[in-house]
Image (cartoon, rainbow, N blue to C red; front, top):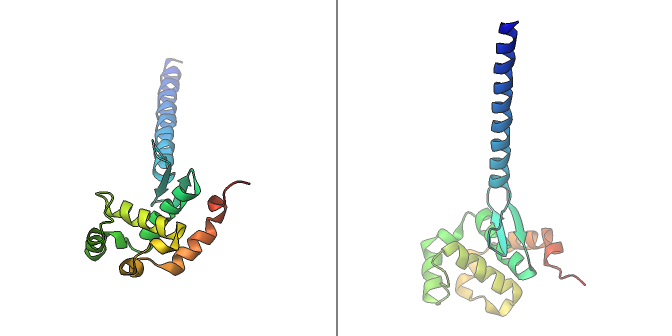
Length: 141
């Protein structure tokens, strides 16, 4: 009987460890896959390709991040960074933020994109992303 109790205690401890490990794995997966906007108006998660945004303009900015990612990160191209710097559009120290912000500003107002930057953006893919996310971009009536 004593041996049975010892085995039961070991089984209970093992089950607790399995439950705790499962909880940790689930929490990590959620953290990894969901865009969790801690103190931000929007977030793009390049692992899951999920966007979260609070306003249509912020959605455009986050779609800019997604476009950058799906296009192979043109924001990391030294030519893009130099062009942005030469045009005094380097608003952030982070080229990916500049890319997304320039994209959002252009889509919001087509007159704002400089010709020197046109070729860094995949406009066909942009149209697909905008179509896919059009519900987010439509302000409530």
